[in-house]
Length: 387
Image (cartoon, rainbow, N blue to C red; front, top):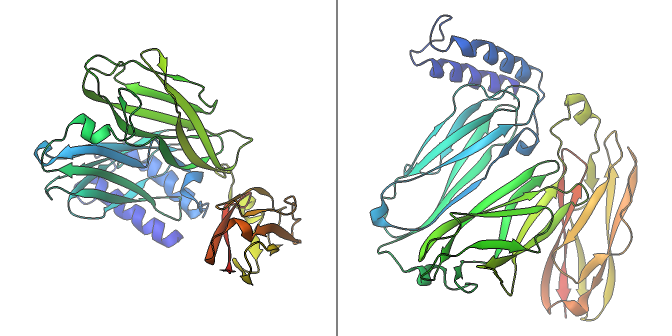
């Protein structure tokens, strides 16, 4: 890994000069010291397993919404922040197809500073639903980050009611009242945006009531001009007491009148390991489960059964499960989650109530949010047949 990063860094340094070499007195001379610092950071092998430990993004998805073939190229940008202790560099961005052009910050990004990736979808493929990816490789992280550009291209422009009327709240047009965000790291925030519409013939002032403390929302422009669209931005700030899957709400107040139903935003909160150095990571918790799937075999509908996952902590620190999220109400925790000492063993126990399941084959996922930098999220499965 170290050799690979250094090779890429060398190629990046040459390419950034523009004339095939880095000259001490050239236009990029001011970047030589940061590049040297970056090389030293990579040499130390202090490489994060999870991209969110070192970098954070203003967004990882840009939705262009509904456009037409006559709108021409569609452009957007993504901003990343260096949350680590050393300079980083974006050394490659790979587009999923030739229909998307991309540019990015070439100089090293210092701790606390930001870099930008700009992308343009050419919009030459006619009327389609598009979902393009940008795979971003950043020094200091083992796995790339995937950014997405998506939207719907129509042959002809559609009316606002056709586009945004399905889930409207009065004059407030919106395609969905439920949203999901990317992973949220403790101490940070995650933001997304979507297009909304004013379906009326007069300006629409949008305010918010009963908003969850962790949630902030804003509409731009606001008021929304008559028969026009606007952008709804929402941000979820991490709550130190909340881990795993959580849902936040806010109810629109439209020209002073409170809507009947709220908007909901769901996010997944994990521990933030960005401040850990290599020594701390080497001495962290490391859970190993005997199996990731427990098969309960064949049960008659209405039977109950305890499901047990056996775990060994092979790390050098205590292993803690912050939260267990289960995708079915048929599975509940059978015993409180217990901390496992370094080198120790323990069980994670669930109670399965088949009365709440459909007959036939069933697979239920359990997601554990943990304090292990190498396994911050552990997915387990409960499977079997109900007759």
